[in-house]
Length: 108
Image (cartoon, rainbow, N blue to C red):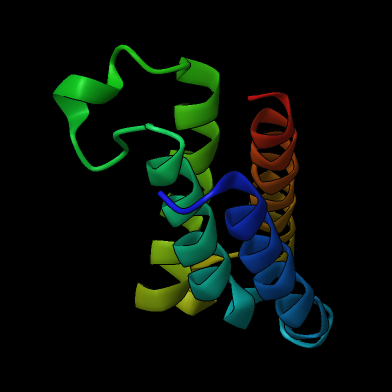
């Protein structure tokens, strides 16, 4: 992990660059949002990729990420099966997690 101020700056810059993409193509932005939030979670110590370890993590945070991640996977695999409401829910989940993690970083 980099210094908290550097992490925060990089994440804020990356999120800002995604804002236009989110507005123009919400479904197309899910992969980039997923990648950013995944890296943020990992840097904060959440073991998203390890089902055994993540059982000890904050279940709400992990569940919210995994629900958004599942929608992102569906968009990649079967885009016609995903409603605009599902895409909006995933974008909102990623945004919520992003804001939570920035706040958590500020408090640490």
